[in-house]
Length: 325
Image (cartoon, rainbow, N blue to C red):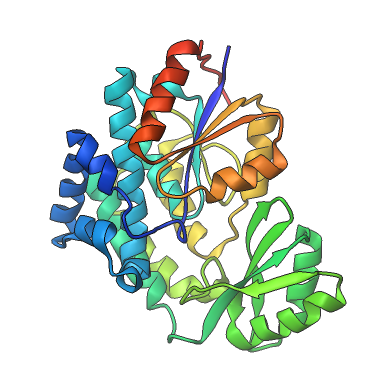
């Protein structure tokens, strides 16, 4: 009996051409993109499929685009297997904005609501502080304790850097003021970190500097009533499943400034005997991380028509067990 999890990618997985083949092959995927376009009053799907890349990469566009691609895949999977997501998986999780995709897949938010929330989230995160003031960097072949030591050493009273993502597989992302990031990159080799690189992002996501964005999201989420979960979703800020839909809004507000506890999220799934992991949407960032840390598990990426065909064949031969987490 197979126990399955759905995983949803975060910002950085977007690419020009995303969703194009999916929309051409499956009318239901095209319908998802049309709903997103109508909600935003913007031809986002054309930007996804044709670019330009610099416009797609903007936080305000990348966030709803990645969710749209993921939800198009979800709709296709349900149609092609004639099963509901609640029949296919025991749990879901998403990396940063991917948590919104996971919540949408679980039925907590409908597609227009998720789209609107991610546009507000993208705009507010981008505008939280002046361009160039903050940034992010990845520390590779490290651990969480080392990363915290580096951040503490690099932070001054008015210039801070903190852990933003604990991704596992020796990868920790830090976030904060740009001068503090620069200091951290100098300190990292002294602490034995062989590789530390700045990331091509425009803001210090998941750091205290995002507090203005958190306040904007608090206002936006007050106007939304989360619906009932059809499958459990693991929250980024706790690395544990929500136990009640009333927890969702508060957690998503905290998520803006808090670290993404991805390594702990995956460990929770391992401990709960999840055997099959399906990354839903654009790219293979999550899949590649998992393949380095969970060699005894089955990991798949589903974003293109060929992936759909493979999934349908796989599911037809699996006896899927629904397991509480």
